[in-house]
Length: 382
Image 1 (tube, rainbow, N blue to C red):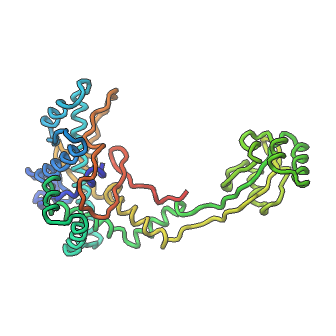
Image 2: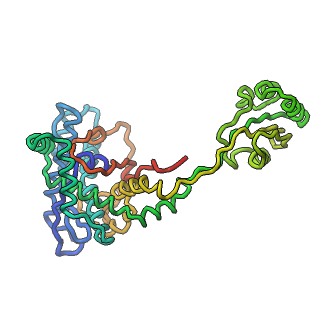
């Protein structure tokens, strides 16, 4: 879900400090640790999201979710949706777009709160410098940039806010956080020893001995495997198995090939499947990517996770209260609705939205999965 809103740019959160603890002020939709997210901010970025969706489908109307009843959104969708689409499905599409907008608002507030707790800061000057560099690179004239703002419904404050959140997320990926992630995911940065082997599987020990004798007398593996092997997967390929990892093959065969030296004929080897003859043709040693080498990828993963799958989600969800009618899974007072099966998918107002914000920070776009999001797993080595 986060991807959609990130693709549209930052959300400038109009925040007011609540004097009522966890209560939601009348002009707000949610409160995160005493700071309220206003209806004005939600409405503004609901419009920006709708503009982006409209641009994804030229000629389509700008449809803005209007929680909690979504009356206007449903009516607008009904005009363009097939007659077979039920009103409940139209509402689901409206709710989905609203949810993504509020989710970004809430989670960006979490990033700010977590940064404050950890003493992680970015200065206004640093944010402005990043923004100015990106703007000057992507727009030749002030008029072009102003046209971009007008077309997307954004303000300079919106984009500056997004840069700030991006920079905070990046800075939260501290050396200590990177090291902790590396230790917790050590297997992802290691590759086990792999061996390429040739095997012949026979039904009897005598056949295995005959195959072994033929190989010792310089018969080719291709001819010998074809004559003696009953292993249909390898008998026509000279018995070749590539990239074998310790523990992958039957126990006796596995022990022999991982104890055996390079280019030595092995066998007969008894197994529950018959008798093997084998030879290790090449060995690729185990490797481990160093923390130093893995750090850039881990920082990218942690930066994405700050919004898509924040490690501090449980803590900050407990500090997040939403108004009835504006509840999302990130609110501690959220209760999952009962689900009913449907046979016709609801029209999506979010799945095909392109990136409308050209001036962007360097935070990579997270991937999505289900009602909450998960960071990308691209750092894992296989």
